[in-house]
Image (tube, rainbow, N blue to C red; front, side):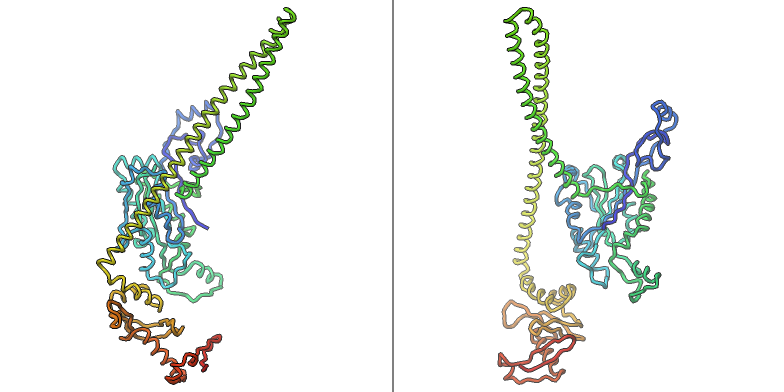
Length: 512
């Protein structure tokens, strides 16, 4: 379950203290408002008014995986509907990436790789925490007009670094193209100290794990998002923002920042609602047309009755005119009213249809822009690959070597050093696909050398010999160590040789 923390979000308005009506959220810092009459409200309004400070907004949320979807929103790879494209150029990246890191996703991965974490990072483990920092709309706009926004950004960065650690803050982007200026910060939850679960078990006398070094670093979002820490973040952030006229919101406020995905979900729901309204209006129009036909028929019947009565007798004609004539007028008035209602319904249906058409055009336009953007990226990558093949042909030849390094068990770091044509000393176990076995070495040197048998090709060598020959040497040493021997004739015979049989935790050799 995701944990959220947010401060209240309200504008700076004049409110009446204690007695004047106000919303539940705004009334919370003061006494609960009591019902009062209009005269009492006027008296309070004239006698006692105060101005409420704007609120600082701090929102934290765990991210899944590398959080690519949010990176798309933050970096404006795809422009959301609520963003003003004419102001997108005002957006700023506030944190400089390390050398070789180009975007937010790479920055998250780089921090985890260079943190010195000894435990394996799980696939579904939370690798980043999103942090939204802003304030009341009116206050943020006023800050922008007064030229204080740079100072506000610097104070936010200072608070983030002091709270979560300077290296853990991998990204911070100021958005100026939405309704309210705000900062999207990204924290990688690298922590030290013993796990909370281990401390709790120790207190309960149920210590199950060997105590580890408290200085070892861990990737743990739960420690950063602990309940007592969330309250501390809100308090300290409000203190840092008080110089800008922003105060802490209500403790436990339910106000939340609408995510990009939630925005588009509401947009689709709005479109569905428009379609339902159109269908309802069309049904009302059909019903009105039926009623109009009925009224017209009644009008004709009443006119025919009036003519018949007039031909019979003058007295009856007078009575009929008095009674029937008034009914005809009423029916004609209803007819005109129904015509007007139908006209209004038709105009409303047309307006709804036009709005739906506009929305469909906007959606299609966005989809086309996204498609063009992806095609452009593909063309750029193709051109880059062509340039690599043209100017750095050695890269293509070294790619199979890199794949072979990963296959036998070298780490990514060692693989990068090996393919850079550096002799690399190592110890550990390497996997042989041919023998389906891992062979251990206490000290060996891995190199990449030109293959004398294939011009322009490279081969991976261990201790100066090709790796396949090295594996065969290690396999022979293993057999000699276990007391297994064979003849050259047995090696050349396809159906004769030595088979390694693994049974539970025992390894046996037999002749077949």
